[in-house]
Image (cartoon, rainbow, N blue to C red; front, side, top):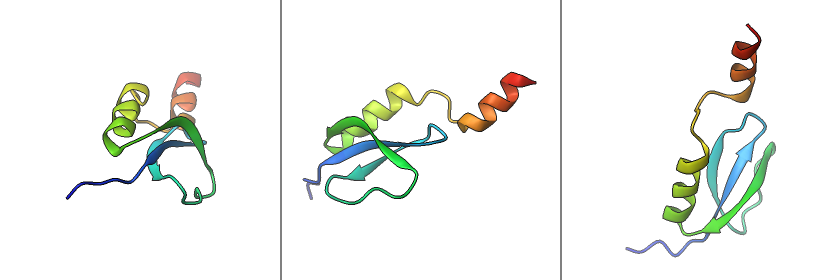
Length: 65
């Protein structure tokens, strides 16, 4: 079974990433990152940019310590 769904990479205020089907409304707090494509393309992009899985607020807190 082939997934023909087009996805977009989305990011929330904590710099956490996910994929979301094109055409579906984004959940509150999420914005488009700019990458659109098949599932593999979007997951590859997330792997490139999301190198620190900690939420932004935690990273900022630890940096201030």
